[in-house]
Image (tube, rainbow, N blue to C red; front, side, top):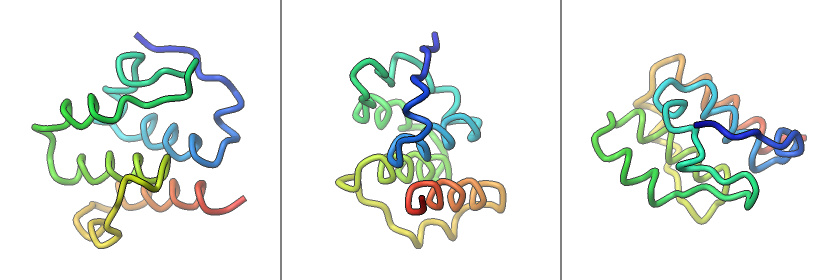
Length: 103
């Protein structure tokens, strides 16, 4: 079940890269539901997503960790982990980082 995403979040420097990653990454997209996102409260259920990602591949978990970090820097991310990504995922990651850190 999906929820309506407020248009203001597409302009928000913290939400925009998260929305991009969750829309464009196949595994993240499977979790892009109201089970993990509450747009009325502007929250992500991080612990639930982390539990759900337990059996995921290393690269899928890297993308999830990047999304968390871009949303809130209290979730640490190691840039060297990008070495483990294929070209498609590296492009997604760099596009998301650009969205977060440029105007």
